[in-house]
Length: 121
Image (cartoon, rainbow, N blue to C red):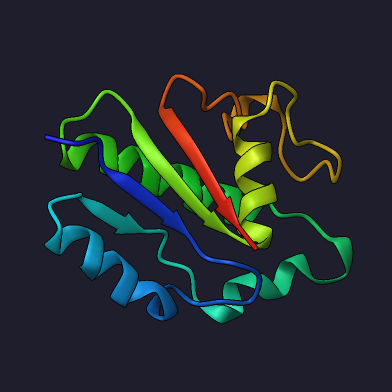
């Protein structure tokens, strides 16, 4: 079975806008799951504020995919701003610039969980 794919929407996009893509992957035999974002989930990030809420939902979805599909890793597809958030998630340095979370939040160092990252503008 192929590794599951987690899909991270772009800035101010809802998961519903990517449902067809998720369905297409699943229909082709590639298990896929969307980060369940709503447009309003992006509001706290406006104006350069913290993206910790998006990182938290991404992390929860990756963990869900690992468990649901009993997989050692996932593929991650991220669109637009989702791409740079995914890069932060995979980073070696913690995202603590807004001091709303600390290093114990585990919202980075995802390299053990992610096999491939694909980003698109």
